[in-house]
Image (cartoon, rainbow, N blue to C red):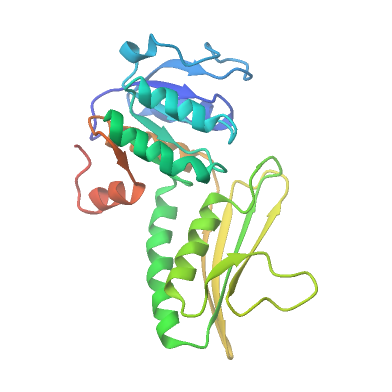
Length: 258
């Protein structure tokens, strides 16, 4: 392990919080606070001042309505925060600015699976190449469990943003019309919610007589927990807002510690 043992607070103690607790113990860390006003098993219902001296890093996986307040409170207390809650992108700029002002480490990502982070790099490069070759039409599709509240997923949104950025004449992404072909400037994004699907993301390019797909399949939610704990290890000792891309750069270069 590349980081010293950490005292962690879990903000949101649902399935992800419990999975993170297991991974944290495997990597030698200690969960000292479980905060969730609704989840059974949590030992706290609110983020209180005393956490400032008890916690090294907080890992926040709650719900979209609660995430901005949770993150702001943690940052103001000076607790470095890793957040994986999706569906509140309109507040992220504000949180990153707050992290810079108060000098507290903050890292948000829509998906902490390290394979997904490599997927982003692959799609970014592929979109640029297909855009230069021409004649290929891109699309994005994702599937998740029936309880997921936001659609499309934050990961699918990021993939679609990368495709739009790399493809000439594509200016936006979203649902294709029900009763007409997709507009030429649109990258169509589709999704399904069913059962217990942990998460599947597909990005494809279809051209005359050939097609290519890049697919990531999550077989176990533990991949997200492992990535989130690795992010907490990486963020400890850092200040201000960071991206998971910075963390991946360090991993690829063989360095993780600040």
